[in-house]
Amino acid sequence: MKLDPETDLTFTRSINAPRQILWECWTTPEHIKNFFVPRPHGIEACEIDLRVGGKFNITMNVDGNLIANEGVFLEIVEGERLVFTDSYSEGWKPAADPFMTAIIEFADDGKGGTTYTATARHRSAASCQRHADMGFYDGWGTVATQLEEYAQTFR
Image (tube, rainbow, N blue to C red; front, side, top):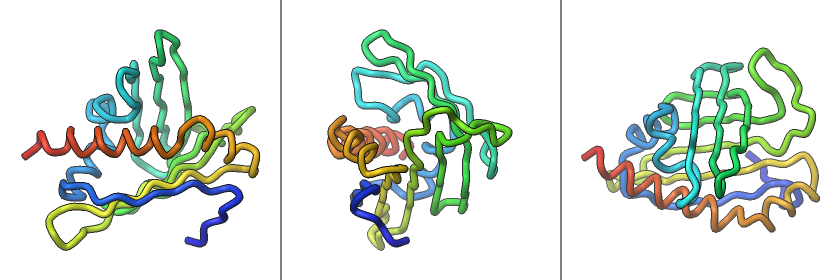
């Protein structure tokens, strides 16, 4: 995948947990609630229909404000790659104001852990900059740390 520095934000981290566990965490609603937003914020609801065109709906609780985000999966490669977007909701209904497409990739690191890459692709340089200013790296980095901590409870 060729990244565009004007519209894409990405980072890669080594996570001390097998990729199959990380995959399970990312594809199971009850697991998503344990890592998907930086604490003290939380997830109020999560609906996943794990198929291309299937829903990926999250309702976040940020300082008592409920923020709904509806989306769909665009690509699913079992155990390796999830691509989802808020550009559409289930049934391919276009969103009025889409924000991004997320690409989550998992690869074995050769040491029992996972090379984890998270990429956010945006429609414009302005929306990408807005996401960077919101704290993409800190926020998504915190989520990766929370994911690792939660995944290690599976052992």
